[in-house]
Figure 1 (tube, helix red, strand yellow):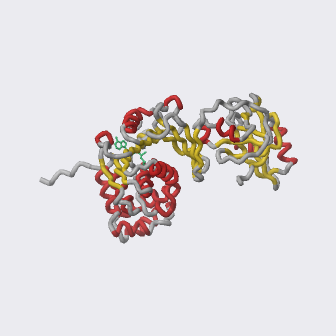
Figure 2: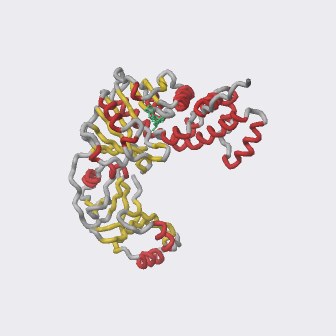
Figure 3: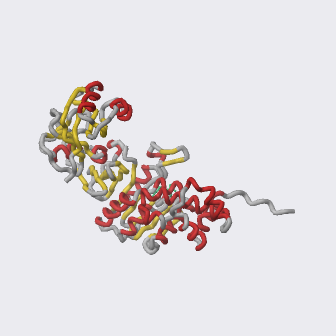
Length: 404
Ligand SMILES: C[S@@+](CC[C@H](N)C(=O)[O-])C[C@H]1O[C@@H](n2cnc3c(N)ncnc32)[C@H](O)[C@@H]1O
């Protein structure tokens, strides 16, 4: 009687396909796909299959696509040496943010850290490069293979030990720090309930509390009331976009911090009351998203001397004098007018404005709809801010102030 077919095992097949990429043939194939054009995939696959096994070609093409996606997070130099799973590249911490966190751990004197939920190793790599010895734990076998391959590809194997296990089973008592980055995506996309994270947020907080120092990545939209009293909360933006929030344990309990990358300016709140509302002055400041999420608009307003809010519900700060701040973009305001489309169209026409940056906060108007209606044409540019001033729909016109 013929032997029965073995039961299908997709996880084992995926791991086998990945390990084939680590052979000399697999690596050479992958290196040759660095600049490949995904729109030509069929032709490329047909050509490569003449010389290589079909499974290896399809694994290499899949990996080449993931590397191209990873460039935005890891930069080309690392991305084209590293390996990824689709979820791994999606969930990985971008290199700039991982570096910032690793430098904080290093400055805290951390030498040995347990990275609980290491994924493809985005954080573990940055930590190892900061000289920290890392135990990198993930429960997914393929993810662990990939993390191991990345440690090796980047020459960090001496500093990164990858362990395939459930984090709940790992003893971290001999480590001087713990980092937890729970999976916040499931089969149906983003997970909003922190207790549905894997591992659940309450487990991650308890794990963090057991270590002398710890950091725990959370969603940037976390309500402030949900932040434990013994944690510092840090919001991090990169290039003006808020990327993540982190709870730190063993640093400054209760502190609220906004860190802006790539510059690295970091603002810790002083617990100031909300700034007063005042008339729109010559300058308008748009605080960085990390500052707003960290509830530190008052701290930025205090840096601006006579800074106040244009409306008690809107996070725009105004002042009469220009002061440099890393934490907000500044605009010089030329016009403060009640919102009126006809009037705005007339101004745009008279001033021959061909380029308008349209910003809005507290306005129902859609910038792209407005842009179409404005019929921009001419050699000049301006910034249009649609907002509320003391409760009234208002349009502010002006120019961006270049950072010195
Ligand atoms: C957000 S990703 C980590 C990303 C990583 N910090 C990086 O920058 O590459 C979360 C990871 O947690 C793993 N995970 C989820 N629950 C786990 C558990 N109970 N034990 C171990 N790993 C787990 C998932 O397999 C996934 O790879």
